[in-house]
Image (cartoon, rainbow, N blue to C red; front, side):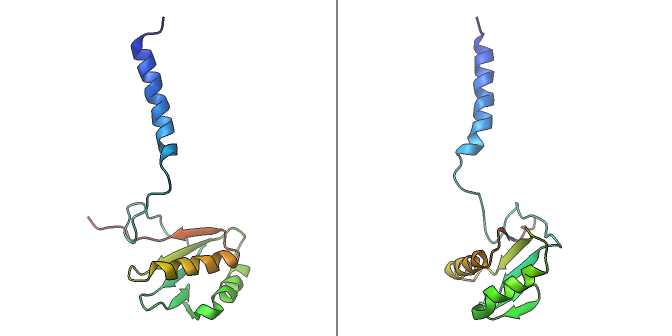
Length: 120
């Protein structure tokens, strides 16, 4: 017969493995997060200032020309390059979502959100 301790340990292991899969979505805390990843030098950075000015790396881009400009930048990069989105915390969420949609329309598959690591 199996002891109660063996059954308890087996159930505990099953719950430890299954619990992360039950959590819906991704835990994010923008614009500050402990989970912010280091910036990859091979990637492209898209920045949105608080006055809704858009920059691709260090070049200012008009919203109407954004998709064309990002496609031109992507041509010079290897396939699967990560695009990092940096948006000021005062920028409207809907505006950021509009930019993300334009990025997807331009063919960007890998998108990373950059967050500030809180100081301790």
